[in-house]
Length: 75
Image (cartoon, rainbow, N blue to C red):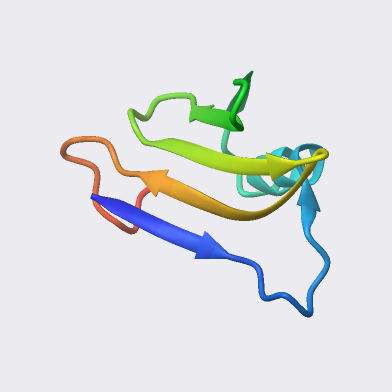
């Protein structure tokens, strides 16, 4: 299952560093993997992956690809 997240146009986009810091504040352990088309964030202990489309280091959208057996509310 996938969940799409988007920042409204009137709000400032986030950097990957800000996204990683926000995940750490939620007591998650993110691991960043840079790809040519965007970025992957893996979460320690979960099979769920976050795919982030970035443009010049800024992002307005992400797709959470929930791992098998992991509910939408997790992590």
